[in-house]
Image (cartoon, rainbow, N blue to C red; front, side):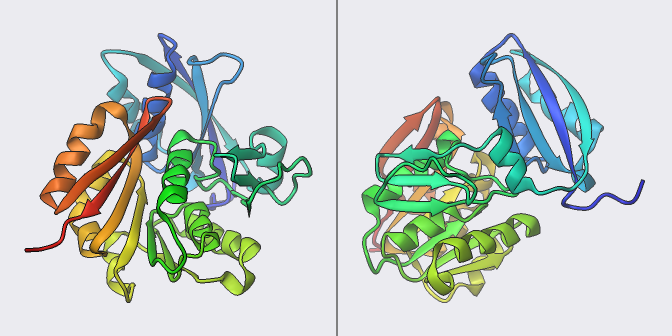
Length: 296
C-alpha cells in the first residue's frame, strides 16, 4: 500500500460501556488531543458509542488505547479501526453525517450540496472535508450563540483554532472587520480558506493564518472579540496569549470544555486579567464570556 496521505483517514468505531452521552463527549475530547478531527455519536443507540475520524498518518492504536484510559474508572471503551482511502469528503459528509441546521433561528449552516436549506438571516456554506466545526457540535453552536449576542459591525475579531472557519465567517457576516482565523492543522487551515472563499466575496475581511497561539504575533491588531473553541487544557495554557491579543475592555468567548470544568477555566482567565460576564451550556458542554479588565 502506498504511504497514507492527510486525505486518507482511519474511521474508528468506539464503543462505550456503560452507555452515556457524557462519556461519549469525554471520549471525543480525549481523542481530539491526539489528532482526531471529527466525531459522530450513534444516533440510533444514544450513549453507546461514536464514530471518529483521524488522518491516517496520525493514527496510532497505542496512542488511542492510552487516550481512552482517560475514561476510567467510570467507563470502558473498545474500538475497531478501518482505513479509508482519500475521497470526496464533502460528498461523504453530505451522504452520511452532515445535515442542514438552524442556529438561534438566525444562522443556517449547510453544505454546498444541500437543497433543503432553512431560510435564515445569515446563510453559511461549510464543506467540512473532515475539519471540525459544522455547527452540529454543542460547543460550536454555543460559540455562535455568544457571537450573535456580542458582535457588532466594525469590531475586530480573532478566532483561535478556527477549524472549518465557521465562526470567523459568521463574525464577518455580522460586520466584524478585520477578522483573523488561526489554525494549527494545515489540512483544516486549507479547508477554512476554502470555506471563507465560498461565503465571502474575495474573502471578505477574513484572513486565515497557520499556527498556534504564537501566530498571534502575526496579527496586526488586538481583538474586540477573541474566540477560542478548543479544549480546556489548551485554553488554560494559552490564556495569557489570548489576553495579550485582546483589546482593553474587549470580549473573550471560550468553549470546548464541560460544565464541570468552568471553575478551572474561570480561575485561569481571572489570573490573566479577565472578568466573567456570562455563561451558557448545551448538552453538558459550556461556553464562558469574559471582559478584559482595564488596567489601573
